[in-house]
Length: 538
Image (cartoon, rainbow, N blue to C red; front, side, top):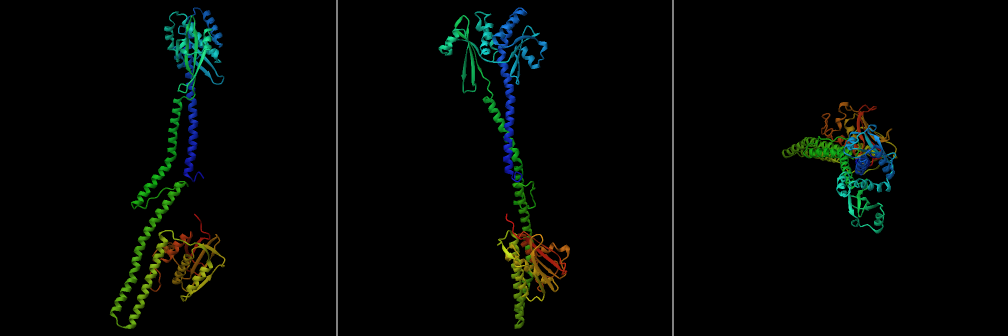
């Protein structure tokens, strides 16, 4: 079904294309978000890692450094230790981050744990290692403690040094008045008790949900340290959604164009062929590829072009042949009229009138043959298809021929009256009549007329004679209009070369064929027309 319908193939292709683009978009989002998540983790840890590094380096002895890290581990409830930097293999980008006083974060998606490595500016032989196996309110509220611990070494200069470390943070860090935050009494009470609070803000803007950490500043009850707002990680921000959507639409448009391109190519071929046909060139043909609608269109166009080309050629041949056939009886009529004008003998004048009448009847017969042939040749005739008894038609033609007193023996081998086939009675009668008339003119003494249903299940009518027959080389040409195999087209023999052409066209419109060969019994020609018993419906 899909093979025979180009539109169903396009629809199916679009569905598959949408599925592929959706899968590609999903994978692309996952890849981008993996990188974004890594950058997000690093941006969150850069500032606090700098503060931790500064806190460690302020300790004068190795033991003090270890004690400081132990206190930090207890505060964060995370394993923190100092390790030898030579034991950790760092990539080029990770080394660069260490040199820029930034943290290296390695996240394990299986265990959902992160290992954080912090460099020490004045001790490149060691790294601070933090195993982040959990992130909760405890860890978040501990962040201001490290910042305040850093600022406490610079009494009276807290804001200046806060500005110094702010460049290492990707989110705001400020000391603000407690009254400017719009806190409720419970939150202010917790700050008075030296407790940090978390503020959540859910915004419909591009920034989305954010979190802020508010911590009291020692010895300054009117001011607080505000860290944030820190945006929560958004797996599908507007920029990413818009970019993926535009990319998907672009890929879909390319895919749809690729699906339609073969159809467009075939349509252009059809347009070029039609343009050539319009200009009078009927030799152009379309390639028939596959079995879809365009293949059917190409086949129909080729059949139409061939039919038109054949019609034009047949019309030219018909005009040439008609002009030739009309000259002889017209010339005889003109000659007879001149003889009448110059002759006074009554009996002679009567004989001339009779000859002129015969020529006029010949002209009528010729015109009737030409009209019938042209009607069958130029297009689909109007056929009144009915169930016809083959024996009835054969018997009718046999009686009509016997009435002509041809002095020829006519042998009728008719089938049973119940043998019927779908046909137009008038045209089937014309076929048998033309074949019998042709056999009468060329037989010696006998013709045979048969019909029925053959072994293949097709209906047939057959006319044989005992004449000289038709040479094998001329058996195809005998069905051409006005074909002259001998010089017998005279007043005595009759015929104009259209009878067999008419039979051939009737056989074509019946969906059958007409063939001629040698009669195995009588020795002359055998003409047989076969056609389907039941006409095929389109």
